[in-house]
Image (tube, rainbow, N blue to C red):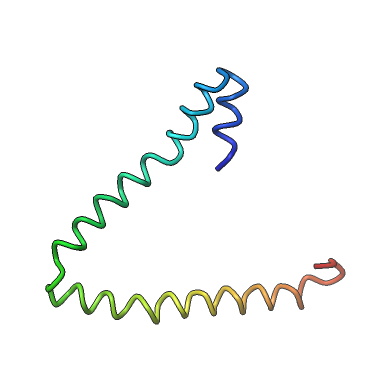
Length: 82
């Protein structure tokens, strides 16, 4: 994430660093604004409430799965010091 501004700084100075920063952050920021506006528009929709209720266990299970995967990696890597 910091690589684009650093390359921009090296190539074109401060304006290049700003251009690199905007190039990395602007697309996801615009998408977030669009999705948030759409999400608020469907405040009372049934599918939104169902989806919102489903996101909680899905994200919790995903975090648990990653934690278990990383814990398993520590025991199966062998001689590597973690």
